[in-house]
Length: 361
Ligand code: PEP
Ligand code: MN
Image 1 (cartoon, protein in one colour):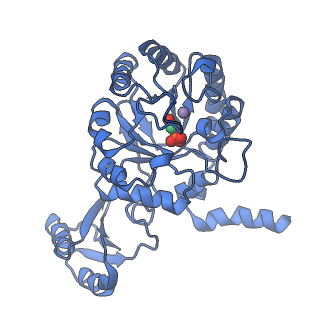
Image 2 (tube, protein in one colour):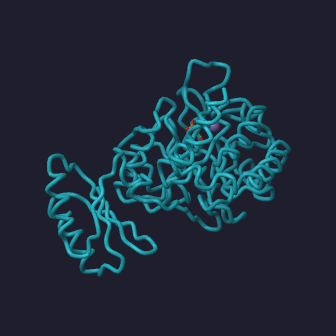
Image 3 (tube, rainbow, N blue to C red):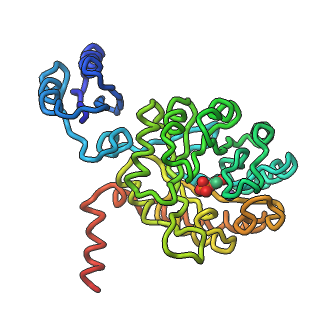
């Protein structure tokens, strides 16, 4: 549930409400809006719901108390109707602009990373990606350069001014990755690694949470709730394809997830067409598709010589392909940016066109 404070409620009244919540062994989370403050009540409320609601309703400064219908609370649009906008250095994710996270699958050498960073920065990327700790299916495959790779990432940031993102695979790595990287990435295989989610939730760095390849939309949102419940609501959701019966592509990109996420949560959503398809030639059409359905950004793998890459050789774009992709994405984004509007946020409006299409069929 969450408490809606009256417009102009005093600080003392807000503190009073929070104190009551804490007294119950629950946690208050504040969302300070333009003209009123909302306070979410988070924890195992159980049978206390009705009496607690009544007590909160009776408190000074409280306008109303509403129940959140979804199992995820802090990441829900019900509690936080405004879009979350994430700012890292000069990059902004979720403000209607198009974020492009580009770079190699794995950081292989200093030269490979810096060369890629220079190229993608010059051609419109806003965030540099590169894996230092790699979650590989085989223990005999290249596992990444580890901390050495993190140092190259930091050097690339100094050189290009772009913030950097890299994967963190376990709780014990969070501090070192956060020391070098501006954004922490949680990979598909770790989406339900709850101790990692909580450790990233205690970090002051924004987190990008990839969808588990076998996760439902609700499980993905509940994973984000773990991060938010630990105190970090700077979360970017990344749709990177899920496993279906289809084997022609590496995964099946679920583009429905983009408008659905925008409807259910205030968090920005990006699409990763590289891991979704596993095939270089499919990256551009699906990146275009992601932007067309309203994604806040794209994550794409780029390598100076993809065929020689130590990981994901078949899906990484070469420089010329990245440049072509950027031209296409800019055009699509320019075209669609004002088309979505409330369609993504309102049930009634969203349902209308679908119903008429079905009706016509
Ligand atoms: C990656 O982006 O480096 C990666 C391993 O992706 P995923 O977790 O989506 O497989
Ligand atoms: Mn990869």
